[in-house]
Length: 378
Ligand code: PMP
Ligand code: GLN
Image 1 (cartoon, rainbow, N blue to C red):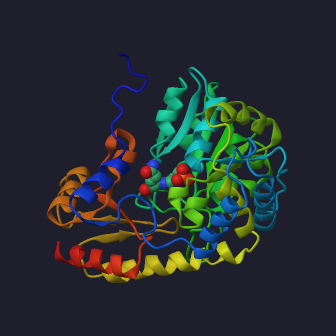
Image 2 (tube, rainbow, N blue to C red):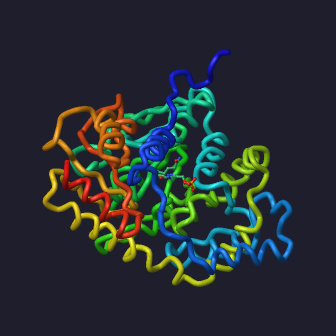
């Protein structure tokens, strides 16, 4: 049969998780915590199930949860999203991204994607007949070249995707970057898809520059978020998107037929849990400590850290050890040394290889210590 995505490979996350399990490796590859989610949250899910919330949720999500999200955004980013019309609960951020792209990108429409990029964007654009227009982030600190963005905008540009804090590099867009973005898109009919799943994982006193903070960006932005990242339960696959009502109305046309609605009891639980901001405001400090612990543990090894200002990922440069391709080196690390990581060339234009691997530090100190013992032996 013909393929809608010829040449599409198995996701690197499936591949490395498979190799990690096969080799019984220390797994710092796919991004998920290896410590438990809060007991209170699990109790809230159980309570929701026992209270009978076991049938379909409303199409756009449980109203009380949308209300809590609206309150949270209002407090953090001073923008009001109407829970009735401007917020949708989705099956993780992945489904929010899929629905958003599908709602707006059609045959021949161009979408600007900054590379390296999270791996779901391009296949989703292509499945909708769109054309990814790729721009490589520049230099060792992976900066956006705003002039290049400007130059690559055409009359066919329908959407631009940003991701801050950024997977896989851990870089963060500054206020200045957001102003440049605002200026670049001003007066143009371009939708902004802002992937902010790591909004609470931001370090060194930086503050998250949500698209919601900037009026001209917010008026065109679909902002995606993920409870899996924020509440240490990626397996619950619950996230959301917010957007101005006229954009959300189009997203609903897709969402209602893609999934109709998502799991009901988890939504009830999160609605209750979000009432206490303490449940997320401590996250930057919590993960900054983990990052610093990991950096301290690997210090003196032949892996060199590339600064990470956010996310729960740390890039390490291994060029002192070998010049072999990162995909090959990652395979050798997992099979010979029992350490699973993610090679980042797979997220780059033309698989450009910078001899860097991505390590997830959302792990217990014991796991990080085990990983660092291996790292020091290489
Ligand atoms: N965007 C980025 C940048 C991510 O890293 C991830 C998760 N790895 C997602 C979206 C998807 O999030 P979710 O697991 O909630 O679908
Ligand atoms: N976001 C996770 C990561 O970057 C993976 C999610 C997935 O497997 N699709 O590791």
